[in-house]
Length: 360
Image 1 (cartoon, one colour):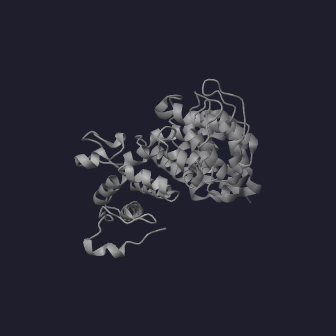
Image 2 (spheres, helix red, strand yellow; image 1 turned 45 degrees about the vertical axis):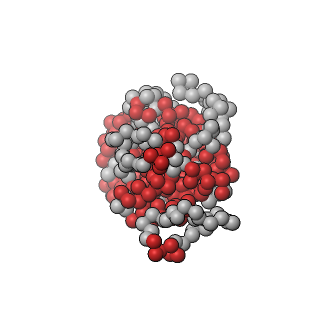
Image 3 (tube, helix red, strand yellow; image 1 turned 60 degrees about the horizontal axis):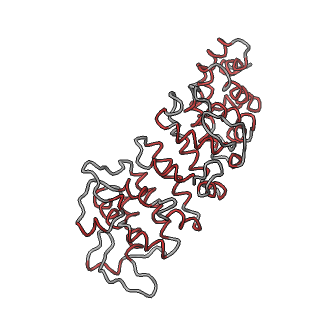
């Protein structure tokens, strides 16, 4: 005999709107406390929820929330991610400037991006939402949502911040990394240049996702010259600025820094999220792993001084370890050279020169 919960789940596909609304409101909490009830009958409730995303906004809101909670289950994730019609439904909603649940759609897309099946979105085409984009590519439209929609610029009910996590997962696959470093035909812009401007945005979600996207892109070593080029992507200042605080530097140190890092206002603050700081430091480490030219460029950027101050002022062991590793790379001798400047790793005492361990 069915339990009350099992009977309640059956009402998700009831023909009466009020009954569907009451059922889904009462089921919302169970999507975290008892998620298995939504896997009954070979995931019939999940199929119902996919349809309810198209229902009246209050019902759709709860359906999206439940699917977000359920999508950490591999079986549910696979069912959602491989469904082309469902994906198109989500894309249509997020591209609609009047969609009240656009942020929830962005959150669900961010979860779906963890499925391998979703990398097909890199080549998927759909009707052009003319108010948003001029591209038929779904991923371009999502990028336009993220850029134009920041702080309610496209949809007053949404900021699209969670798309940053969606992009971070796309950047984990080679095809995704290539997308972010390739100028797109519809606007001739390299997508990563649209993201890096948000490394100091007020939203920690947006900053965190963008930082992770940048880091994942830098796993593609051949793209490093493009990323570091001052006239194309110019990535370095956008990574170093979040690491920079209100510290005063000497005149010689200041002049050796990138122009963007010079004469910062006295109220300049370092990113308060240590996980973001750590991600940026790991990105800098990845950028040093490619070529000597990249390491020389980073040395000339004044990165050492920024990392030195970050090590001194951020009381987090992971951040300090990453600073130490990066300084070891920046200050070590290149092959055939000896270090002439007497530079030391952060926190290194005079009698500890031999203790510096190179990571390459």
